[in-house]
Length: 332
Image 1 (cartoon, rainbow, N blue to C red):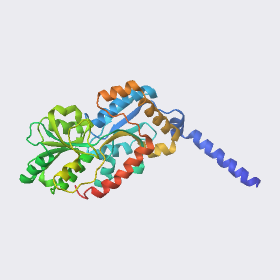
Image 2: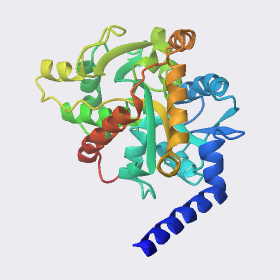
Image 3: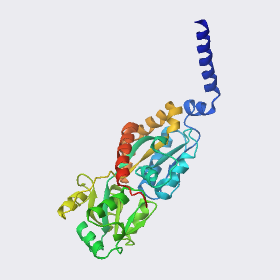
Image 4: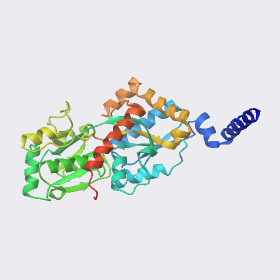
């Protein structure tokens, strides 16, 4: 009995010594946040994810009392940025501040990704948005039926801007399928950020875009909304839901896929190794979204301000992954 107690005491002492001499534990648990934090945006500059990340970083660095820089690592529908983030230190000095859904899931399904959902510790989905089908205001298409009829009559001529790996890209395919068309019946033009894709439709470089509805409010005067990929219409847009349009045209309805979720994620190993430090970031993030002045500022920029928290955010992403898995083509 005495020997067992000695062994237990020795083991406890060993753990204590290891913790004391582990530099990552010392930094992340006791001294977190570090001298500098970096937010990685896995999409291009100017889009909704980028604007959300920069606004959050500017406010959050005051709460954490440490500078937060924002870098863009675009490419592959977010895959380049996700990979870059996963290769960065997992000590709480790097966070993925991007469209965390559906880009991570789509990259896993479409590319030979070295990561999966369990490698990310999701903190919050701040800005959740449904996809809007909208055409340039100078085009003759008044309804989705008009646009799809023109696509069927002149396959491959109508141009549609999307961000690769986005729910907009998949909702476009679902809409085409619902109207009995396929991807080759339109000319899909890809952009690495929502901002670039919106600029393309606003400027007439493409005929239609399928992008997050809230983020598209900034170009409202240049476009005509045709349909919304949602369960119900939006007060911001005079447009029916996609399934309403399909039913009115005598077609079968399609699954409603949740739109983009802009938010924040950490390395899963950071949360596992340093739960107290991870919770500090969670608490800081939640506190800034309770700041009325900050929330008003975000809303004035048409940026979402929702607090879902780690558990609910993770639940949405994981459940939507199953939908994406069923409807994402095996090959691009």
